[in-house]
Structure formats: structure tokens, C-alpha cells
Amino acid sequence: MSHYTAVATATGRDGRAFSSDGKLDVTLALQKELGGIGDGTNPEQLFAAGYAACFATSMQLVARKKKIDVSGMSVTAEVGLVPNEQGGFRLEVALRTKLPESLPREAGRELIEATHQVCPYSHATRGNIPVELLAE
Image (tube, rainbow, N blue to C red; front, side, top):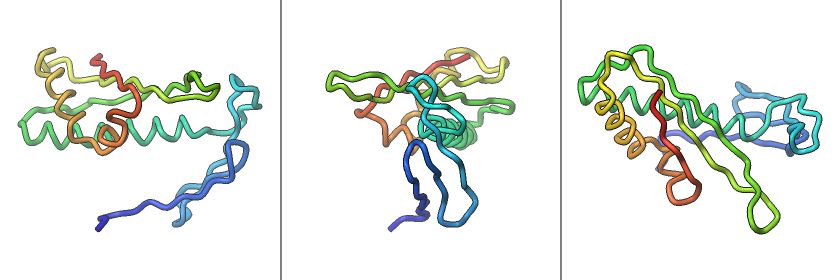
């Protein structure tokens, strides 16, 4: 049984997306790079925001268990839409984690890898799309 279920409805890339509780209501628009007008957000931006937020929160939890201070850290997700062999598209992700300068590089890398093992978005993408983990 789920602890929480998000419910959202969308009418397409040139439309609207909204959550059942009314907290999210955005205009969607096909990106200029894909021939659209780009006057709204798009599914890739929404996915990037969700993945970045989830990974950052997961990292805070992992760091707390390991007694590592990650104050001031941030995660930037880059979600790419890449042509596939069937004439459609596939996703790829780069997660750029900015860690405190006081954290040794190797400890930071280990923390990122440990976070990737527990983050729900990482579980969902594993084996489905490439995810590159980068420390900055």
C-alpha cells in the first residue's frame, strides 16, 4: 500500500497539466527545439525538477545517517530528449550535485553513489534510461 499517491492530469504537450489537489496547474508547450512555440513548461522540465528535488532530499537522508554535513548542497538535473532508432525519442539524465567544499572529493562521490541506490527516481530510471552522476 502506498504512503502517498500523486495524481495529475495532462492534455498534451501543447495543453495543460494539473494536480488533483490544485497545487500544480501549468501551461504546457512544445519546445521551440521541437518545432513548438515554447511558451510554457514541458514534461522534461517537470521531470528534471522532480528528480532533482527527490535526489537532494534522498542525499540529505543518507548524509544524516552517515553523519555528513551537506549544508548548502544542491542537485541540478538535466533531462535530455534524444532521438532513438525507431524515429521517436528517449530520455537521458545527468545529475549534477554541488557539494560543500569542506567534503573530501572521494567522500562526496561515495555519498552520491549511495544516494543513487536509495532515491525513488533513481530506482524508477535504473535500467531504463542512462543517468550520469556528476559531482561539482
